[in-house]
Amino acid sequence: MNANLTEGQKAVLNMSQNVISEVKKVVIGKDEIIIKVLLSILAGGHILIEDIPGVGKTTLAVALSKALSLDYKRLQFTPDVLPTDVTGFNILNKQTQKFEYKEGAALTNLFLADEINRTSSKTQSALLEIMEEGKVTVDGVTRKAPDPYIVIATQNPIGSIGTQMLPESQMDRFIVRLTMGYPSIENEVMMLKAKQSLVPVDSVQPVVTAQEIIEARKEVENIYVADQVFEYIAKLASATRNNQYIKLGLSPRGTIALLRMTKATALLKGRDYVIPDDVSYAFNDVVLHRMVFSSKAKINGITGEQILKDILSSVSVPRVSR
Image (cartoon, rainbow, N blue to C red):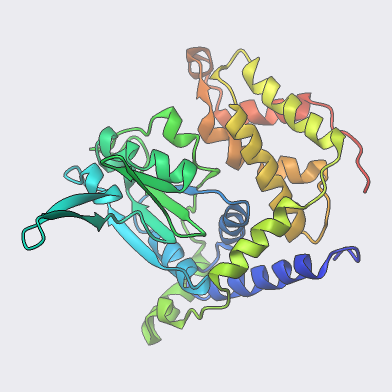
């Protein structure tokens, strides 16, 4: 740990370790995913988890809500879900003859949008405003979401029957896209043993308050970034926009998301300043889902991961010291 860390930064490290320990009770063998989700929350972003059913996506979200002491709501995005189910709606009170607002599922601290790509594009788009601005507008009246506000959305692989791809504008609002994957044999044995004795999620204890999350985000914002790192991030973004295999490169919103994730990574690694390794650590998770690859990449059998790896190796890494 860097000796120059402030008391606030040290508190964030202790808080993060406590959260990780609690979530690990029920999400076994996925420490890296837990850390990346926590980084996303500290960076003030929303998380998209793309994976097959049954690997623990919902369990992870519920465990986090418990450990973080956050109000939590879950909405299963089936084809018949309407935008008003997400944002809320006004209904006439027959006794008062006045319209009353009925809150939508999205107005909570942690909103789990389960299987978001199984619903209509119109319903998917109902989340755009609240994810970007932390508020919803219904019949001309704007209401703020609670602070902190976090969306964890899950989706099945695009090849699944009955799914609709999220539009680029929606994908761009998720700070990262993660994949949990299957557990190893050893971890699956541990999971089976844990399931025999109790309901694991019930064992997760609240270790952080909502106010502490807000304060932690402020500490992340104050992490020092050298000019060389700012330029490094900008050059990486430019490289995605000028690559023969990429049709749609990293947007300015994506560049800002990369910076925020980089700052959070630096703090969780015990530093009060960013180094280029922090950028490369967050790069794929932040950038890959924002890319639209050209037909040339598909024809040549080149994956997005290969393209981003080549971009990282093509941009010179600066030397940085605090």
